[in-house]
Length: 249
Image (cartoon, rainbow, N blue to C red; front, side):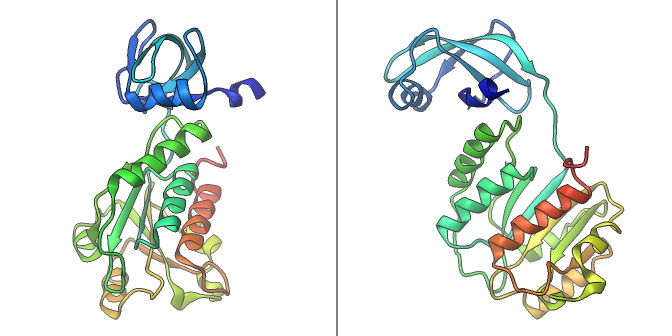
C-alpha cells in the first residue's frame, strides 16, 4: 500500500484504455521531466474521471512533450456522493484552500455564489479547477468536482431542484441544540444534497427569507461558536460525509 501512495498520479482529460497511447501536455511533460526528474520507462497512474485509474508508462519525454502508454486498469471508476458545495467566495488564499479541501472531502460540485454581502466581485474558474485537480491527484480520488460559474444566489434558489436537500449553515442557530448538525442531518430524506455557506457578514434578510421558504431547506448549527466561512464549509462537509455520505460505506 505504501508503494501505491508514493506513485505519481496525473489527471489527464483524454480517453483511457489498455494499450492506449496518450499524449502529454507541455505542462505535464515539464512536471514529469523537470520537477519530478522522471524519464522514459517510469511508471505512474493516470485517471480522467470516467474510465477508472490506469497504470501507465512514460514512452517518450522531452521538455515540452511526451507520450504515455496505458498498461493495466488499476481501479474501476466509481463516484462519490451527489454532494454540492455552494459558498460565498472568500479571500484568494482561503478560496484555494476551500477548493482543495472540498475536493478531498468528496464534493461533486464546487459552486461560488454571489450574495448580497459578498465582497468578491469575480472568480477565476480555472484557478478553482487547478486546485481541485491537484487535490484529486494527491488523494486518490477518481473524479474531479464540477466547477460552476460564479452565480447570484437568488438565481440559483429560484431554480432549486425539488429532490435536492439544501443544507445551510445558519449563524442564527449557533448553539441551538434543536438544530445541531447530527440531529438535522439525520432528518434529511433526499439522496442528493447541497451545503450552502454564506459570506462572513451572513445572509441578508431577503436571502434568509427565500431560503427559509424552500421546503427542502434544512438550517443547522455547527456548535456554539461562529465559524469562519472556510471552517464552516469543511465542518459541514465532514459531518455530512460521516452521517450520510461515503465515510460510513
